[in-house]
Length: 497
Ligand code: NAD
Image (tube, rainbow, N blue to C red; front, side, top):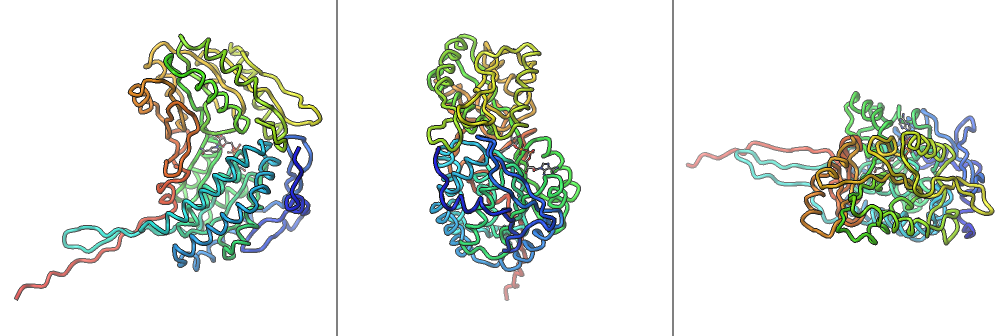
């Protein structure tokens, strides 16, 4: 296992780790805390002071106050601060990766290679975008001189889940800050560490007081404030579809624009002409990455009946190679599940799936990892019919459910049989079929011969039960954090003398 850096040790030694409001690091007045645990070892990592509803109100008020000056900063000034924060994240990349590995249980190498650099790139992407993008468009109109302008909303509230705390935070606040908003961030109580550390870097970068506020709070308590407070002008929620409905309902009632990035039950359709080695490697990776706790990953594998046996043989070989070890083990490919509650929920699904007739064809058991007590399990494959609960519901662990199909129409029907619509993939060597199926699968993202494809400039989002918002690094996301304004005046035509 790798050793904690000095900065990580010192950060975790705070008792408790405070929260950030209006440029000050504060604590719960009654000393209430969240205990933070390392899921790889079940060891206590530290205590995080718990923000109350009134702390969250204060954070909103401070963010609103800060907006009065932040909104007038130039794009150049905001871009410089975002670049400075990105520089500091690069300087402390190891600290951020370690905190993410400790808190979520994810492989530290994955955090170094994905979570941290993807977040940093996002800050830089939006910094560059605002310097080069005009936010005013002159309109060509009859009898009226007019233009359309995009302006920041004001205070934007962010509520994040526990699975990619740092990356999602930077993907969210990057565009919101770039557009000129101030932010109140509510991280998941289970994994607040990297977000709070990011807060220290934001202060060091020189973000003015109140522009970035971080309130680790209970979901319902903070959610109530953030979706109802009149000074919150836009809400961005990433999390389960169930909680998303409550957030959407409250924002709808209070007429607040809301981005909802919700759960998924992604499908991978593998045709019999696909490169099965590539499909087996890609899909095994899809359920082991972040221990399968990935909203957009492929968890329904819909395989052509002529290819299913060969595909299963290959994917079992791939999964057997997975090194399951603590997140802080440099050689770990897959760490534990994030918590005991999550582990129990996954096994409830596997048990119910079996009761409903599915067969476990690989894995399916809790795992002991030598020398540590953590929430480990084997990557698991189930096979059965479409009626099964494990085909229909998001399990959020290293579990895939396999069905078969005989023709393209049946595969597409299976993909579209659920209300979720986040991300699917199609695997075939036939480029025309790939494009056709990609368009037929109802979701925000269709990937070809790969799953989990992200690139700068490529929009990402969900539809139906997976939400209504888009994320990641594209101009659409920046515009999500702006409001439109049109400015017009009649053109007076002077009479010709
Ligand atoms: P969750 O919905 O339980 O919690 C998400 C956040 O909402 C947490 O911060 C939580 O404290 C807060 N919350 C809980 N109840 C609340 C309430 N009543 N009001 C306001 N906030 C409340 O989700 P989770 O278990 O943390 O994360 C896993 C889920 O997130 C999965 O469904 C996954 O698919 C989804 N997810 C989606 C995306 C995406 O981009 N679409 C990305 C990551 C995760």
